[in-house]
Length: 239
Image (cartoon, rainbow, N blue to C red; front, side):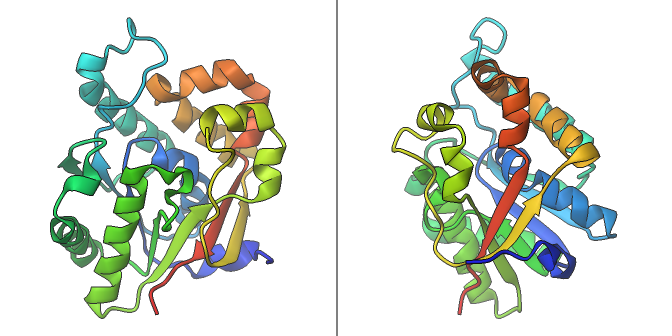
């Protein structure tokens, strides 16, 4: 497979559909910033507040307040990226697969009707890490597009072998099953993020410290920066 870095030029209005705070910062931050610098509108929908996530420091980020903490972290992170159109779906973290699928599809459809995107960025059938919430949100988005009858492109975040081979010990920590899944589809964009874009992406991730500080400590700041320097997208537009 080959990737075309210029593919970002044809994305049009973008809607990110994600499960948890920090999904967008890890997976679409660089793509979004590059698109916005071309005058593209970028919006984001997040299904949950991430209240079931693990914290790097229970004293600093107590689990009992994690939803509140992560909402504020997300707001701070999006401000760094320059994304000012964001919507919470207020669904329970870790339980999306138990929600009536039609309800989830309807929520995403409502976002599509409001934003009228040309492109949706989300998870593929693999959910990137296999997380059930990731898989479920991607399924909702795919169904919503398929049922909309509107010409909307769908790109799923993915990774390539070389990405996690570079830091195998860290990848094993983050992806216990041996590495990120590979979303099926044609690799259409490999977005390299450097300079100011990467500075801002790392700052945006740092704003969500309850989830990212532990990994930065594990990897070291320089390796963490390199680890976040490329975003990969495959085409999962429904036929």
